[in-house]
Length: 374
Image (tube, rainbow, N blue to C red; front, top):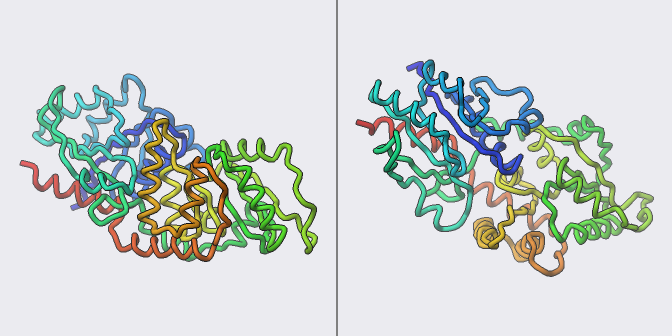
């Protein structure tokens, strides 16, 4: 009854935030629910600022070529659940070692291919389908496709058990003050992006909004977003202070944020610009108006993925059009309608909170497969 299953999660870092961000959140939540996790990652550098304190129950290991002496960890704690995140190919020597253990004990791990998040229809069709392994030391095993998603027939979304309580206890003013931001009622906008073509349009729009109503403070995340904004404002000349003597737009450049502080940033702001897979889910749970920059693909496949997401969100026309322009389609950004957009997001959040979260569904799935094993 006190057994803590051993999970081995493999992650190759393509985008420094998205893939490792998802894998770390999942690892930490599984550990919080009594599991033991070894997270194998080829570049763990982002964890130094993303999760500097680590997590009890999660061991981060270097995914080297080959794995070398780390493979001996299987002797002390054999793998019971094997997760390859986002279709990465797990180190062959690790699979061979797992197969050796299976021949000695008769127990094979539950092998899961954790896929990318999408609202497209194929996710419901493909979720939980088996993929027989036909060759190699694990020939005869089954790999299971596991798709996160937004409907009851998918694998759900990452949502920690303690998330709602954390958000309810959040103090906006105190958090901003702790980051050296003297907030005096400005409209707060966060920016986490790649290099959107419409960035200059957005900055002009924020200046206009701050000139006619409450001033705007833009909180820019470190990395590509900061570089993009600094390049965009280099030659800008904006209006003088508004009728209240305030600058219409002020910009704060943030340091690298821990994962919990990124949540705090989204909770603090009135409008959030997010990018990639991990942050769009956090923006949904934040319940504030947001705009998502989807990871761009050369064949434009991301546009269909974006439309499916907006359909799921039941986005009003202005929010849909804003997303389209922000993600590279030609045209002018419509004026944000924050009450309408935030109402849309909160309605979607309420629907999604009725569904089991990703960690719960993974744990249930693994239990079912283990109990069904011969």
